[in-house]
Length: 126
Image (cartoon, rainbow, N blue to C red; front, side, top):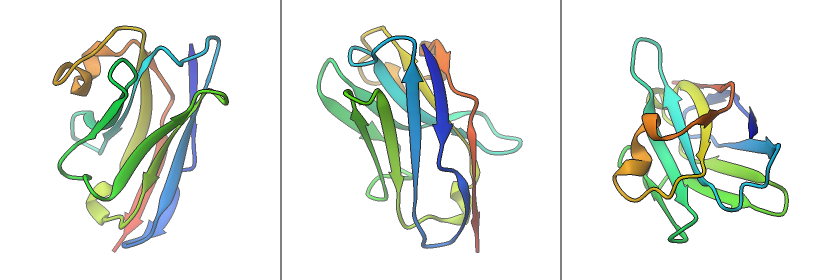
C-alpha cells in the first residue's frame, strides 16, 4: 500500500484545511487508518483514527471538536478536515494504515501502523 498526502499549507489561526490521503496498491476498505503529526523536536503523535472493524472514529483530546476524519472507500482516499486551526497545530501531518484490527488504545500508537505517507506540512500563523 502506498499512501500520498496532500492539502497542507499555510493558514491563519482560526482557518481551515482539508488533508487528503490517497492510497494505491490495494484497496484500504479493510484497513485501520490514522492521521498523525510531528512538530519539530517532538515525537509523532496521534491525531485521529478510523477503525473500520468497529465503524468508529476517535481523535486526540487536543483536536476533538475541531478535526474530523473520514474516508471514501470507493476513491481509496481518507480525509482530515481541520477547522479552527491553532498555531500549536503546526506540524508535518502523516497518514498511516495497517491491515491489523486495532482497538483502543492500540490505534493511537504509531508503532502499530506499517504503512506511512511522506507527510504534508501544515503551518498555522498567529
